[in-house]
Length: 242
Image (cartoon, one colour):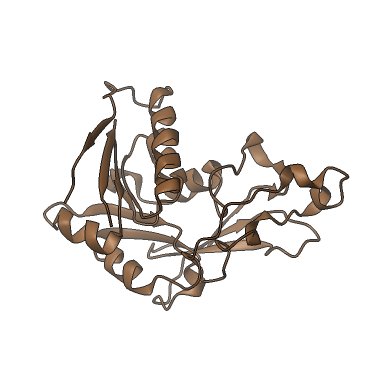
């Protein structure tokens, strides 16, 4: 696989397989937190599986406007057990969306995202496994067809998470201990956008070129926006990795 690296402000983005990228980074400076949304193994990447509409959108005369063909890829044909187990060794704290699809240790703290879906064939909630020593937490954040909180759109990835949900998830981490965040299944970069908005450093790894390009664009846009702690903004730099 051809590798590529982009450095945009406080974000370092890698195009490649995390099984190759992570060992190349070394273990001298492990990440404070892993915040990621790995494949669930439910086939949402194949064909038009993720273009289903829901809620009021599915019953509207113009339902087609909410549909999008994301192409026919195979990254969600099965879970990424090897990759996730590797990534868990590179961070102290961990938040793993779709953790209920993986054989992870028992935990006292699941993060629950209630999508407020109503009467649809989509799941009411998504679960994130954590290794945080606290109780279960829940967020209610609308993400139902055309009805989405804060006017967010899902335009670059079939399983794209809302920025608001990822910021909430990151806020559950011990803030005094967390400066650097890793996402080895970065997709279109929502975790990175959320991390930058919260003043964190971000490292994202994505193997699909079309999603990587979308991540670079979104991260560059996010870096240009005012943040909680203003810092000098570096220009995007492309360099060889391996």
